[in-house]
Length: 580
Image (tube, rainbow, N blue to C red):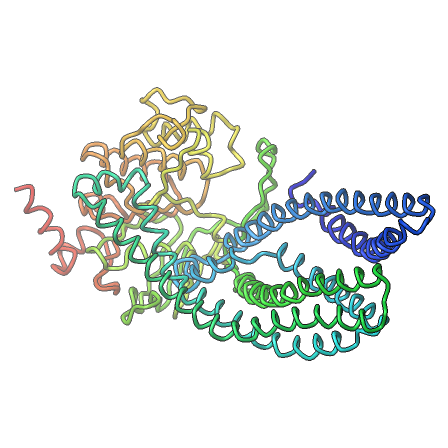
């Protein structure tokens, strides 16, 4: 049975509908039994009482069996609903641009989207319908027996309650939305306190109590706001709820009074009293369902807003079957070789000043380019724009094949291979860690071992099927070893454009020099970009782009830039002074 099995969607309503049909039979059989019992001492034939009792027992047994079936289907629906929401949100998340994913407002929206519950919306919707029909049926039975005052009181009070419940539901959901950033922040603090990497600093600096108080302060603030909202809600609803309770008691008394006045039989009085009690329970149930539907409707709207976000037109995720054994289909395309950048400008959300301003240059096929500059000069931002991970606020990035044919952003993206500075430590098998660079090579041992060798990640005695990372009991690696495996991940992908975004910070000087020389050697005749703080490494590039405060201030060879005595020369002399 699949996770998203549709059978419970059919079983649950069917079981509840059958139980709904059994309700009148139960009431009528109960009336018959009571009437027969009252005539017990008058010589009534016992056979009728036995038949009525057996019939009532059968109906009650059926109701219990069907009720259990309904409960099992209900639980299964909860599992399916949770799965489907997470699947839809994660699938959509994979299709969004990196710019959107890094936006706090989108993170808040995604958090709220996870709160949607299609199973609750479905169950409450049809329960609301069934209870409404059941209520109408019970009211009609009361009217049939002359209890029209009961029906009038019910129909008069219910419309007053519904708008109040709708207003309370809207206010409650609005508060939940307003608290989303704080809830995300509290979740982040909890992750800091329970994750392995921050544990060293937290323990060393004795920050445990501080973060615990921080977490408690966020939760207490949310709780206080929620309590205040609940108090206001109760102030609004308690008077009308008390009115409902009083009317329920009044209507029960009216049933007994009218029944006694009209000389109804004991069975009829029992029947009417049972209906009055059932209506007393259905009434608040209908109101609660109405409130829940309003809240779930608002949450469903939040999920739809997330699912309707504009998707990234450049990077289209490929669905991979883990049993494919490398049989993932690929699409033939022209490879990117040259790039023309025109007036490229980009500003991060929430920042007043752009991180890149009017950057323009042209890179020929096969050029080796070094991108240098101080921290915050825009180097990594430029690389992400070149790779299509960010969309320019202004200007353009235009990729061309070797023969000068223009490429779409998606076609160009298929040509990129990257070894990034902010790589992710993935607690997986060594083969998985490397093959993530080109997942269709997951079982191509020769390609994986070659990439491992290119990245100098082969001398440690790691087998491809060894698990790494302590999260699941794998081998612990040093920072440099993690970086080397991340480099292997980039090398296994055979792209025509290679990006090397300073992933050598954890390496010692000799290993760093070796890694950069390996990068330039492996690049071969491919167009390559090396982002580095080490200006000594930049000397090996065909051309150097110098960024300062988001602007391209210089470009040329090492010799040309040193002769120009500009920003590059200043940075080079500054670094050289540390080694004198």
